[in-house]
Length: 230
Image (cartoon, rainbow, N blue to C red; front, side, top):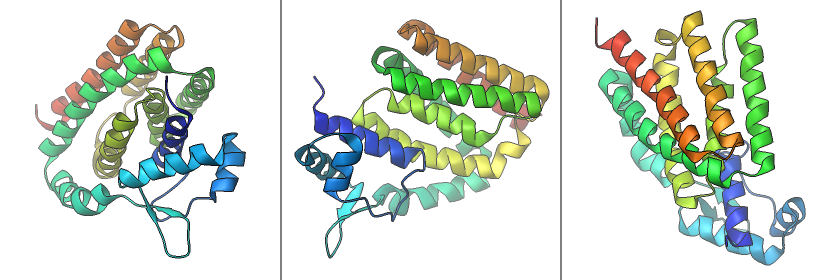
């Protein structure tokens, strides 16, 4: 059974992944966090210790914890340069993401809570509204995938995918306007998201995984077609 401190750590990582908490932010006090999350200060303290050991937090002079990211500082910037200069690197990133997120959809179908499902549904409704208005906003698409990642309740996966998503976000800024701009592409992506949601909603790991594979295979295929098959 997952310990309360582990659940708190997962929730804090979720807030970091979706941008509610950013690198450099100082976390609220242990007392405030325990009140906000409805858990004991001991559980909060253990969660913060876990995140500090993983390199996500650091204790600063005067007390308190600040969000840091060693990988972002030491690894991401050189990789960003490759992504900007070579579209093949973006393709490699998309292929890695496809492998990881297929597993995540499967685990989310098994482990998601009703609250996480409700959040996914909210993002899906936002995408449907965006599509009716013209185009799906990437920010909403990203939050949808982030919520699926959080629903795995796998601490190591969340740590890994957070860094993958950082690179994906950078690659999107560089290349997104060149891909998935047609109405047909947007509708395909929306339908994929509906299928993924339904699999997770029904707690059907096979269907959720299959839908995610279909979605990201489309992403990889279209990227290849538009950049390499000319």
